[in-house]
Length: 397
Image (cartoon, rainbow, N blue to C red):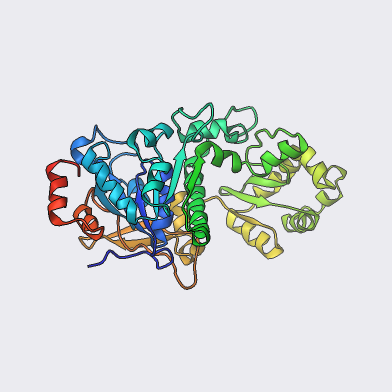
């Protein structure tokens, strides 16, 4: 029975996945979710040294990262295992890895070596700090990149010290950018007929994600600091206490400021000379926020959101994770999607945030067990049964 694909969009491409932990698997998940033939290459069990980063494969984190993939085991440090991998490269389209930069050369799977086998191959590499340069050999970790990339200096409340973001955003963004780079290289290959080396790093991804905060420094010479829950430049935008909790309110531009003051029941704010422009409101943000907070505590979050929605003022609740997936719009967008495990049980995953009208993504297969598809994949790549048996005998798989 053919392995089910999550979509037909990328079904013509075969991906050899050498990644581990998060940034690499995030990249490859994007390709798998759009139907690529992803072959996850794992270390044979007899060569493992304890539990790897991220915990056991049964936990929700691992499971969510590795749906829609097949798994084989292969020892790239053994001659037979490396030779087998190179035979896979002959027919593959992409190899993705997030080893330290020097590992590829030691294993003999650097870009020039792979290109000599298959000139159409795309090698995609994610590292902590880049494939070259003074930090090349440093180990990469998400929180380190958050700090070095400036994010922690602008996150959190003023005066409270640096604060990490609550998700591994450098890992995730590096993975997403790498997937985009792979797809760009595959599109270019249709013109040139040749693959290329796609490179990104946690540090590059994090610096790019500074976006307008980076532009403030590069173009205006402004060093952003921490602003807590306030928007750095548009005031009032932030968190306000209500009778039963907190809500977000975002007031951008004078027209919305006028609507907001009326909906708040505080038209006097419009006449306050300290609040006349966004620049003045930003300068006097504490006074603005205090005046708003004195009003918002008198109604519930739901009451305020209804009033602001009617007035055309952006606002919204601050949900816990369980409340997120209970939200009617999140349900409508199908951001929680079910897959069926081989034993018939239902398993729920975070669905893709992008919709394609003709070739949508789905959870076609739940995460594989380690090496579940080893023999199946090798047969598909033209290995004879005695060759597969020899790999087993040599403990290369």
